[in-house]
Structure formats: structure tokens, C-alpha cells
Image 1: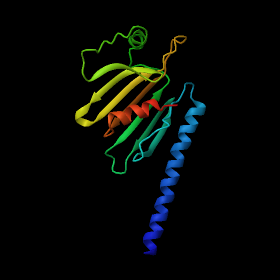
Image 2 (image 1 turned 135 degrees about the vertical axis):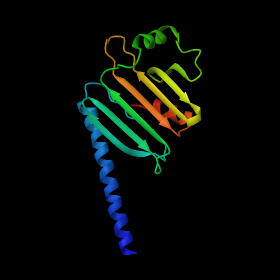
Image 3 (image 1 turned 45 degrees about the vertical axis):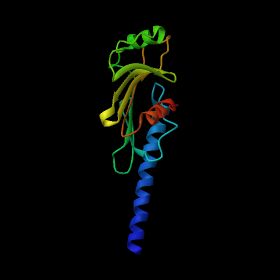
Image 4 (image 1 turned 90 degrees about the vertical axis):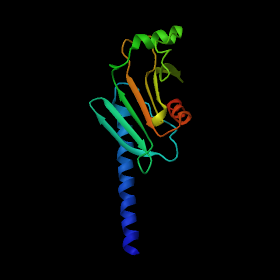
Length: 163
């Protein structure tokens, strides 16, 4: 019994150290990167911070449940290479969506962001590649969030909570 208790205490210390390291990585990214780093103020209770990696101006943050069947991942980079920025800005001005006939992909505004929203209902998977429009800038940081196993309402709540 004492060995089991000792093992559990050691395991708890390892988990706490790992979480602290990842939280430190996020704080370091917020302080050091040349662009706004967004972190969710809301994460579903069953998810915990799994990893945070900062490398070459890119930050990756991952939250998941204990058995790994539900997760949310964030990727943030200084430049948006994958998105059609002009298309997003046109949508912001006129509401014109080039994907309007596509049931699983659309341009959508969520809070202050505009981006491409993808839905895979078979996998309960959602992703959102987005920018925060700023008409005074020619350069936009790239933000991407993806989830598996999380209901759509929860996914949208996470995106809306980005601060």
C-alpha cells in the first residue's frame, strides 16, 4: 500500500512538472513572439493541457482527455501561407463566400476572427483556420484550431474564448 501511495505521489509530481513546463512555454510565446498569441480562456473540463511547443516563431498547443479520444490543438504562426487572405477580407466586407455550395466548408466569422471553417461530422471533427482582420496591415498571422470528439457547440465556445 505504501509503495502504491509513493508511486502515485511521484506520478503526480511528474504531471505537475510537465504541466508547468507547458504553461511556461505558452507564457514565453506570449512574451517573445512578434504577433498576438491567442490562448483559450475556456477548455472543456475533461481536457487538460497535453503539450506546448515553441519553435521558430511557431507555437503548437494541445489539450486532450485522459484516453486521448478527445482533443483540441492550436497552431499559431507569424505568417499565413495557407489561407486566401483576400478572399477572407472580401467576405468580411461583402459576405461573399466562395464555399457557399459546400456543406462541410465555409467562411465564417467567430468573434473578432474570420476564417475557413471545416466540419467532419462522421469524426466529430471541426477545424478553423483564421485571421484577425486588420485593414492597416499587409501581413496576417496564421491561426488554426482543430478538435476531435468535441461537440460543435463546445468547439465554437473554445474559439470564442480565445484571448
